[in-house]
Image (cartoon, rainbow, N blue to C red; front, side, top):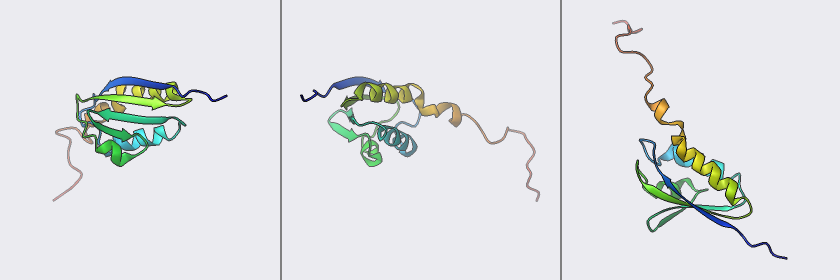
Amino acid sequence: MTQKMKTLTRELVVQNRSGIHARVSTVIAQRCKEFASEIRLRNGKAVADCRSVLDLLSLGASNGTVLYLEATGVDAEEAVALIAALFEARFNEDEESTRTPFSVGEPSSCKK
C-alpha cells in the first residue's frame, strides 16, 4: 500500500530587518536537511528549494516580504512548524543587531 504524501502550505512574513540574507539562508537550509520532506519557499513565481542557500538567496526576500512555505512528505507538519518558528523568532537577529560592542563615551583602550 502506497502512502499518499501530505502537502502543507503556510504563509510567512519576513520580519527580521535584513530579510533573507546569507546567514538566515544557511540556518534555513541546515534545518531543512533534518527532514525527509521536500520543502520549498515561494515568492511570487520564484520558488526555492529550502535545502539550497543559493535558491533561498535568489528569492530576494526583504523585510515585509510575504512568502509561502510548502512541505510535502511524511514529516511535513514538523518541517512547517519548525521553519515557521524560525520566521516568527526573526532568526534571533534583531536583538543581536541592536547590541554594540561598546558603549558610547567608554574610554578607548588604544593610546596615541
